[in-house]
Amino acid sequence: MSLSFANSIAAQSRARALVPLCVGAGVYLFFLYLGDSRLQDSDSFWQVKIGQWILDHRAMPTTDFYSFTRTGAPWISTSWLSQVLFAYSHAQLDWAGPVILTAIAVAITVAILVYLLDAQIEAPRAVLFAMLALLLSTHHVLARPHILALPVMVAWVGLLMAAADRKSAPSWYWLPLMALWANLHGGFVLGLALIGPISLEAVEHAEKGRRLALFMRWVLFGIGALIASCLTPYGWRTLLGATNILGLGELLSLIFEWMPANFSSFTPFEGALLGLIAFGYYRGLVLSAPRIFLILFLTWGALTHVRSIEAFAFLVPLVLAKPLGEMFPRPVPDAADAGRWPAHYVTALGALMIVAAGWTSTSLYLGHHRFAFTTTHTPVAAVDLLEQRKAQRIFNAYQFGGYLISRNIPVFVDGRAELYGEKFVMDFFKATEGKKPELLPRLLDQYKIDATLLVADAPGPQILDQLKGWKRIYTDDVAVIHVRDPADSTTATPSK
Picture 1: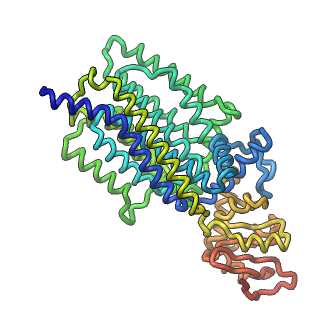
Picture 2: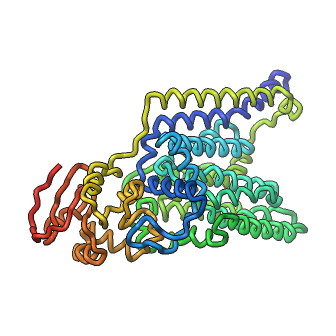
Picture 3: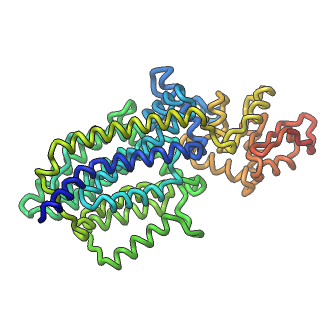
């Protein structure tokens, strides 16, 4: 190796430490600039509201107190820590707080992914994988708890895969990651589920004489991870709460993020799947049985539920990192050169400069931009009118539930589908979407509804227009209000 080539590798090694930081900073600024597009899910309203309740009462919710249809029913918050973080940031900076938290979480996720991949493959390829993962996940980058748990998911799986690559067991020091994940979001069950197949990867390639001992160490780690996941204010009930959503059956096909992947039009996910298949055939990529299972499992999850595409996007590269590193070997830097003192100082200085630049950019941007929630989920004028009329029992659209909760108005239904149950929400959708319009008057009478607040372009308002005993009193581009008509009038004059 020539002296100039050796110096070049050493310089690249020092620069490589800054690559994850630079990429993360770029991602942060990108999502900060697109912050308004992260505020388009009404669940964010009740997430913030519950977090504020926890801060105000210094207690954890165990029953529902936001609806009039399920008041007092058992309910726990499996994302309490994320909700507290969102609530605190919202109290300090209005909606800019949750946007900044979301952008930081995505940036950290990408930085961690690049860092972990860089141990096996060259930095440009690591960055490319991270950008592709981000592209596939953009549709689900919202100001909601799953985003704050995303960096923990990537770090957890990355560390487990690194242990498997070394043919060793994970360190017990990693268990606090699982505890953190379990307090941030119910998706921690995925982290528990992946311990098994990843352990098989480590055991399969270990020496025959130590396979049993290694397998038992992984089993003990798995038990430790299960215990760690229960280190929440709810204890073992966190596991039940995190899996309740999967028991909603047919209802999952009506909630967008739980719908199966749709290939009626070309999507980045479809392109990623085709590209993965093409690359495997073209390069003759050979994987072990556990790695094949991991990829198939993550692919199945993404095909079954749209929200699982982000797990596919960020975790499949970690599964493929070692085989790709063996397929595309890179020059190994001299350890003495790579570890010289300038590397640490350059990295520290670079990190400080990136943080300073990010803070300055954020301050300048917030100085002239106010983040606002999408108007399709905020029927402000309609709710103002309902408050003036002192409506008590409002039959609200599913997407308006979060906003009503933020206004301290009891709701008929909201995004906590696991609270209401499959039949209740299915009857609601069938009644308001015109699939079974005869259900609508039954629900209105059963729950003693005195006003409805439905989406303007949905079938529900048209059904109510024809329903005896109801009249339309308000219409705008977002919402429609109907109230009971004492005179049983079947006609109404829309007003604005």
